[in-house]
Image (tube, rainbow, N blue to C red; front, side, top):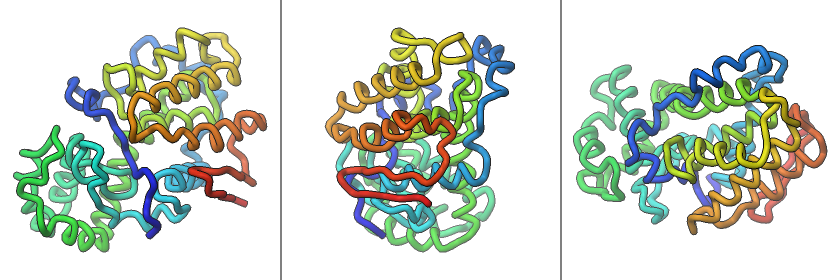
Length: 276
């Protein structure tokens, strides 16, 4: 596995500590009413496009297009979120790792990670490793060989990040690229009430433009959203390299590739990637 430059899920601790963070629904009743306009949007949930999305995120998070090789990834990168692990960067400090291990244990009681549940509950919301060291990384890697754990990672990724991002994108009337920009943002920033969360980024963009569902231009809206995203990234040192926006998502947008159709060429942290 490639050593990541900046690994997954730089979700804001403010977002976590704020209340109803990770599982909070993104769609408000007002936005849900915009469904008719969204129906014309292309979907990132098409299997081929979803596979592209997984590769794009992995290029930024793991410096690799092989996202399925990341189930066993785990390390503390010193960002205040404890251990970061798995295909989407579940963090011991931001609740989603706890949710994942709880789901795994529901599906497979007595698994190798089940004994860490009390410790995961204790460290939730902090960067502490109390009760996890020294063997948690070893046991995570062992669990990652289990197809039940791999499926649990897939399902939690979809429940918490992918599905809400696609739903919000469709409600806003944006196509596949727009839905991907939402997904990448919520992977990094999480949802919550603070300005650097996904919801805060979208709110900031609404101050500059309107999404298609509200009568705006899709390109103008996505530029405003990416501007807001870059602003949010620059508020934290761990996110200060904005190349996943500047030399990836902006490249597709400038090319008018709103459906995220291959071939795709982009760079992250100076490395070049291609999907044919």
